Image (cartoon, rainbow, N blue to C red; front, side):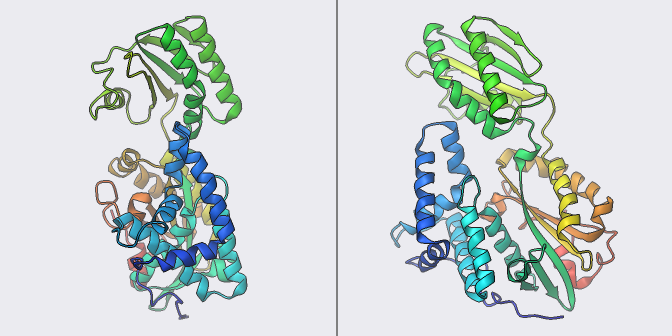
Amino acid sequence: MTFADPLAAGRFPVAPGADNPGLDAFVALCGEAAWAARLADLGNRAQVRSLTGRAAQQRHALELALARISGRKALTKPSTAERRICAFAEEAVRLADSLPEAPRARLRDQLVAGLTGEATLIPLFHLLRTAGLLREAGFAIRFTGLAEGTPHDLLVEREGAEAEVVCETVSAEEGRPVHRGDWYALVDRINPELQSWLAAHPGHYLLKMTLPEGISGPAQLAGLHQRISQMLAAEKRQDSHAQAVLKLDPLMLAGAQATDQANGLPARLRAQFGPEAHLAVTANAVSGNVFVMAARAGQENQIAAAVARRLGLLAESRLSGALPGIVAVFLEDLDRTEWSGLRDQLELEGAVRRFLTSGPARRVVAVTCASRFEMFGAAPPDAAAGAELRFRNPSHPAAKLAALAPAILSSM
């Protein structure tokens, strides 16, 4: 079966016009009241001088960038990432214009959901990006998830061969025993106490925390905060508990006061404790006092394993099995080091290929993986070479179909 792609005439990505008319239309699609409320909320959260405030800036960078671009004078040259962000916003508008009333309402519901609470617009932009990449590869696209309410998001066709496509966003937090959001909340909560403690105990200190079972949720955070506070108040050097093992030592690290230098304390701590450690530095530039907290879980991060678990659920719940299935995964809440490690150490490839040998994978002909670095046009090594990582399932009956090759052939 062949079908028309309503967005096939559009280029991908498309640079915004000088006056950003596409962004105005995007804001109108979101609803001006919803958009204004979102920006006001993010503005309040991002202005807070705290780790959680900075985390909010990073998590909601897409919305903040759209607001920044729309308010910028036309003569200012946008960056590569900004051009791509504008392109996705314009693509959303073109898609909405191509849809009947009911599917258009579904799209607007997705937009409003992405502008609420901790949600973001990333899942929708991931859908648009995936459709654009497949379109560039010669596929005709139908947004059946929006148009017909199918469990899969896209139905794609090339040279008579069809495939169902599921677009899913997976947070790296699902594979971290110690969630970064919880760590940031703990640090912000205890930082005023550390400032007072340092004033009464001048010097350089290192509090090492081993969290055997990790930590998550307000109750565990409150308990750990209380143990740290009690330990410092009692001037103890160690505290052991099933939840956490705490040890306070002098900070024996050259350059301990160079917290503002590129090769100063943060870099030295990262080199000493490794990429999975959670680190925080409380320092006083005038007195030179420094208090470092370094936390490690009792087990390594399992981000790749979290992706594989999600793939198993998706294959059975969102693919029919009547057509070859492609699962496009967007890995969110990753930093450069983590994304490079998942690729270079073949952790992600190993986890996905193990999944492709499992029973649920019988519906999946290929899995693709991408992150913000690919979405916003970063260059290697920050981004994977090419637009995404792609892994073909060689045991699927459609694995050798030439018509599907541009979407399913392994990239590594």
